[in-house]
Length: 514
Image 1 (cartoon, rainbow, N blue to C red):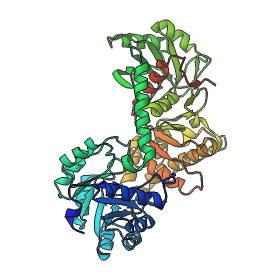
Image 2: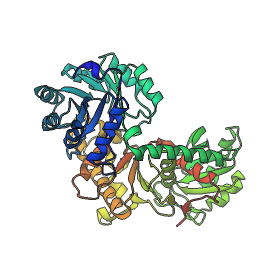
Image 3: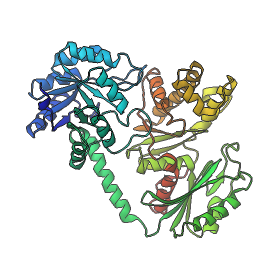
Image 4: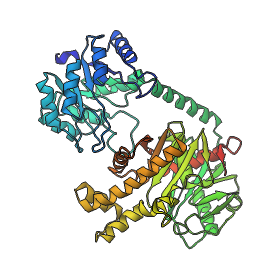
């Protein structure tokens, strides 16, 4: 095939949702034929079997790849040289593979050599400009932006046009791919310097496109229900308190205050009310997310070491007296779970949220309902230790730092992650133990609740490489592997979630109080 066959063209990725109703050869062939009939210059096909089926039906170039979930490597796209041979024999013209700098069974150079031996062209799926620079030095033909946003941390929602431009400075043969969902975004990718554009989910994944439209409709309905005034949202934690005005999921004002642990909840509330005056806007209601358990309108500590409060403190009654507005109060991790459900990575289906940070918190959303009470207090489980200690005492950032210090290393959890990235065995052993216990917890959650996904947040949960470690352990613990996704809202999840709950003002309040 010649370079001109792809130049300035649309490439349609015909990859149905794995295990979905369209994940059959007949559907993939139909997608490919429809795309080519409408003018697509090439198609991108996953698996040798589907490449072979499509090759018999279309004459345009096929970009082939094979996805695998490996126990010892995060690389999923065409990890083996044998995959290259299989795709070539099936009829692929271009072989796509993961070109990121991560542990892998075959090097980028070995994969390119295998492509050359088959007489095919090579496409490097990159996450950064450095990936592209190394792949070009090894002799690749095309650079793709395919893996931008998929190698750790929260996944962005928009195409990475900056990476398109950065790769364009290295070679004219840049293929834009990843989160291109509208014609306008495809045009912007060409304007940014792309040689061709790949569009997948927006065309061939009905489930994803449907979810986008539903989210837009629900967002419009939410705006229609919105009251004229915003919600005052408060998140009370053991080390800091966050306060902000939230309207339609948007944080308009924000302040973060250190928690004076000796002051007590009466003084916390009065101080927060004073800080709210500085925002200079009125608000219709107050939502409070607090560490501990909220039951019967009262607040109690689950772990006094996190934040000591009087048992059964009448939080809602006192807050209503201080703020003079209707007040809703929920556990902070549950509020964050709801925030991720309505505005973040929840996807609108049944989900469990785990925040792994100084401790472990959680929240559960089933059937569109946020479970209250003690639901989601995963960090306090004692079964993994036989009753010796809560799970968070053997997993969290506090435990990671303590284990490092026990080994004569200082600097906290961040230093452990940095040491592991540099190849320190002692640091990797600590992170392996922590992530293994989280993997077992996730598997247990899947067996008990069977959510569509488990959303992982927190400073440890979203630290580079941690989620990959959890996923790798899950490959080894048998069936019931959950779908783990990184949280999107960061530290704002709690106040966004509790603001949304409070704005429903109880008549639409979908929380089971327990």
